Length: 106
Image 1: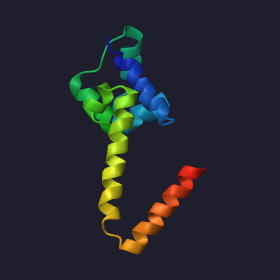
Image 2 (image 1 turned 60 degrees about the vertical axis):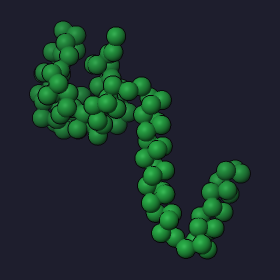
Image 3 (image 1 turned 180 degrees about the vertical axis):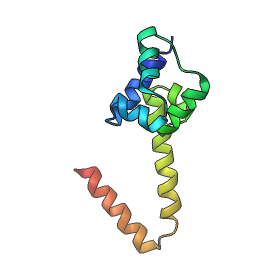
Image 4 (image 1 turned 30 degrees about the vertical axis):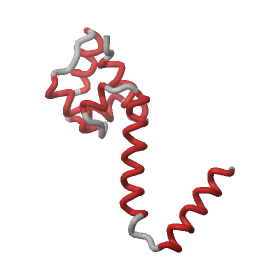
């Protein structure tokens, strides 16, 4: 079974946020979070959407495992890189590829 509260904690800690910071960023009282954890209750979908927005993740990302998140992130990075790479001239592209090759050799 998916551990919703554990996932909130994981994402919060990954950002270096305290419980207070998450409460402040979401506008959800810290006492509400404390009640959820104490009673092992999950937030409503509405509250979960607010939490996800504050943590900069989508609902599908929230429910995905770490490996899937890394793949999505890498795909997003490649798409962004590709959109910029095509704007370069041939010499600039060659220079960028040389830098990448140098990084890969280290």
